[in-house]
Amino acid sequence: MPANSADEDVAKIRMLYLITSFLFTTPYKKQVTDATFSLIESVDIETYMWEKELFKNTFSYLKIAMPKHTYDETTKKDIFTYRLYEFPLAFQIWIYDSFHR
Image (tube, rainbow, N blue to C red):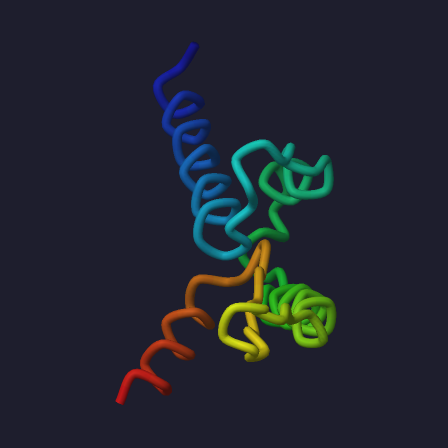
C-alpha cells in the first residue's frame, strides 16, 4: 500500500470521526449511514452544505423534545427535561454560554 493512500485513509477516518462525534454527535450504538461514508469518499466533502444538514437535524430534535416534560409528584412542579440526540456540539455550547450568564 503506497504511503499516500494510507495518509488519505487516515484523513478520511479523522473526517468521519469529526462528523459523527462533534457535528452530529451520534449515540455510540448508532451505525454510520451509507450516505456519510459516500460523502467521505467523494470530492464533494469540501463543498457540502453542512449548515443545512445541521439545522435540519437540530430543528427536528428540538420539535420532538420541546413538548416533553414530566410532573414531579413530590414537589408538585412540572419538570422540563430535554433529551436532544444528535444535537450539534456547537449549538450546545452556544446555549450554555447564553444561559450561563
